[in-house]
Amino acid sequence: MENKRILIVDDDLRLRELLKKFLTQQGFKVTCVEDGSEMDLIMMQHEFDLLVLDIMLPGEDGLCLCKRVRSELPNVGIIMLTAKGDDDDKIIGLELGADDYVAKPFNPKELVARIHAILRRKQTASENTSNKQVILFGDFTLDLDLRRLQQKDTHQTLIDIDLTTAEFTLLKVMAENAHRPLSRDQLMTLSKGRDHSAFDRSIDMMISRLRKLIEENPSKPNYIQTVWGHGYVFIPEGKKQA
Image (cartoon, rainbow, N blue to C red):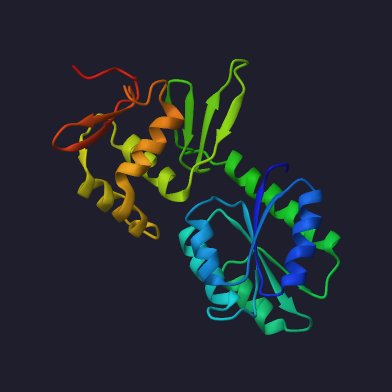
């Protein structure tokens, strides 16, 4: 379970600091925010394996956030933090897609145990998925189900490459349309969704960053080719265009 990313959404600063310290000691990568607005911003920049959502939040409450996250990210784990004895919120949270709940006040060890249980279930479900979609190119493995890009090192060990949500979506769209030249407008249309606004602003910037991550020589790319006067094309074989 090491290096799993956890996002804590809670407006209680003291609790956030306590949980971040404790979960970090357990080997997790922890990020904390205080409300839904901050959650949206950070989730456009990073992928998370599990969210810990407080129900009572300023602005959009935890139940609304749970419903929205579950509709957009069906594989992410969600634990709701509820007030002790508030059974209605627990039931609603589970119906909206939460994997589990913890009633305040709680022992941090209990939260860790529930996090481990959820991550194990998610991992088992992913491993048992028969129609797992994986795209291979060069030394890279692009797992569309796990939303993960990995590269083999000199020892043939797969190393994770950190991508933002928008960058992963852009690479996924290009890989699924290999050999098909796509204009910037087509890339934005095919990438429509939660992070569509990010694509509106920075297609070329994300292409540049992806090239730095996957190309041996970003100035002379083999995989993400420029189609002059049109846009870009993904060549998984790494063959240069004539």
